Length: 65
Picture 1 (cartoon, rainbow, N blue to C red):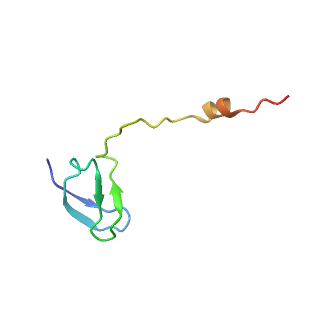
Picture 2: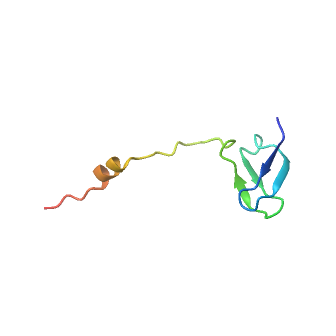
């Protein structure tokens, strides 16, 4: 399990010696106290679907009489 240093995306503070594998990518910033998730380490439990504009038009088109 590797320790790493991560810069908080909110306040810019460098948080040192974090084990993001153990916390599934989450940490609480030492400076601002915000809970932050680092996408590169997070494990997705569910895929988020993506839709094209054409798919959305087909799904939500209102049929007019």
